[in-house]
Image (cartoon, rainbow, N blue to C red):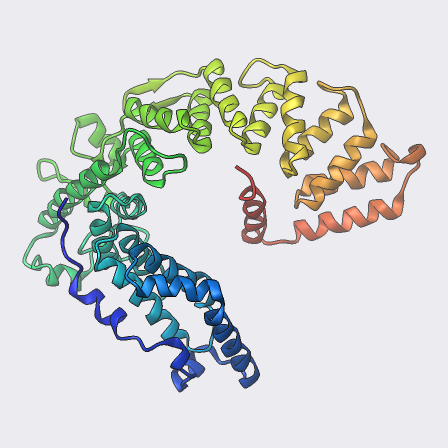
Length: 452
């Protein structure tokens, strides 16, 4: 497969970096990082020690010898191990880019994906989605799945186009519109250009992302399945005019059969995509399929009915693949009996599995079951222990219930009321309630992210 050559602008930033060992700090870096002389000296020592490490030196030798794989690996090591250092930060960055550029010169797909991500990311101070798309497309043409995921991620974002502002909603950028030679167009004409170009971009992303045997966790396949499941609507600001009237709502456009989609929903195809991934051991795909059958779906005229048996099948598949979250979810549904037929004993077994793995929400639910004797013999002492464990896993409810049980003498040695312990758990609960909603959500996500 032939691919386009590396964009000319990617070489100057990467090919003229001096070796890091020969660099010392300069005024620009001091201004950027505002570090003390002692901290700068310590940073210098860490960088030099890192470069002197035998494993690093060996990897660099292979990279300098022409191995594209080693070049990407060495660039990755710089990024992950020392790019955060204040000493010679710019030189470190340039060396990282140099090795990625060397690999791109050999048309090595992962290198294009790395530079695409760097160019897309605000974190690295290189945010330019147009350039990121060029790098991702070059990598995608080489079949690199990471590059394909990057291209798909940006292409599926309705707010992105070559003359759009870089923001959360669709909005044209006047300078970009003029640079694209579209400055003479009326707004309705510009909206049509957006739709035409965006649909072509989305179609290309779909072709890149679709693969018959996706590996578990393949990001592009998940992006495609999600887009097929929900569709990608034309942003409100870019919807078409009908018979000279004002722009119509999405609901009205659906009723009239207007061109309201960048990608139309296709639940059948979405389920096929998810089933392919699930069958190859993809935990998240199994959980997504289970959720579809637990709640049912109705998208643009296509209805998928609730199916408790299919829900249990796909959630069990996720549990078998090692998913703690799936064990918790399946246990919760079996214990509650609200959406699927109840089976308290079986539900507690799944909850216990997730609780033993340290998953806080499962510890809370299992503790209630033990305290009430639902699906398991009543055991207040074990319930108290699980509430405490859940509290230590940032579960507010765990702290509140642990405090209440200590204060009431439930599950405590001899059934004695333990006021000092109750006060301690109450203080922990109060500290959790005092967190801002943003911080509380970050703590919750951090805990969930530890589990599959």
